[in-house]
Image (cartoon, rainbow, N blue to C red; front, top):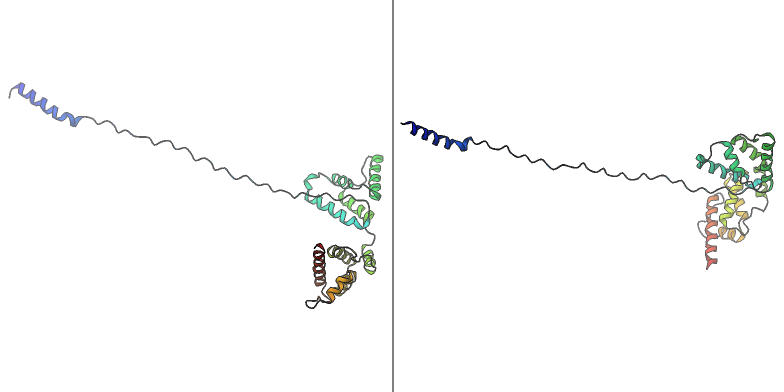
Amino acid sequence: MGLTAQIQQLTQLMTGLAPALTVAPPPVTTSPPPVNPPSPVPSAPTKQRMRPKLPSPPDFSSERTSGQAFLNSCILYLCLALEQFSCDEEKIFWTLAFFKDGRAARWSKNLFRQEADTGIFPIQSWADFEQQFQSQFFSVNAEADAVNALEGFTYYQGNRTVDDYLDSFLTLVSDAGYTDPQTLVVKFRRGLRTNIQSQIATMPFRQPADTDPEAWYAAAQRIDQAQLTNEAF
């Protein structure tokens, strides 16, 4: 075979191999789209605990019968609004702000006069203030006063509702130290208006026993409420 023929043969052979020798381009890789991080879920706002609105104590004039109630009102306010007072002196001054009349106002004025004279307020702690207040404005003998009231007729219901009468009656028997059920019924019944006494005493059924004061209280309240409702019409 001549040289020319060999060259042609090699050329044909190379041409046939060319497609097989073609280098395939590298595969195109598609990057995944960027993923945004999830947005944080906003947390629910913290609900702040709201304190109940506290009523201020009433003005105090000096009546011994109301001294305990006034001091109790002050102590309750101070306990629930403790963050408003940084020291005992502020608590005392705040309480004295309600001493606007009578002997209470004169007592308060005397305390501030002593401070002006000496440069030191005469009461330095709340405990001392409570003690002095009790000696000045509490009943000297609350038990004896209550017993005397229950032996008289000034505690009677009169024109008051049974609810109002019952409130004052329970305070009196508590101060007097009365606990015997039959005694409580006797005293309560005696103070009721006559028409309510009679209706309870003549009830055809479920008449309260003479040793059950709670039943007497409830019966009197029901009758009084029925009368008030009837009067409204």
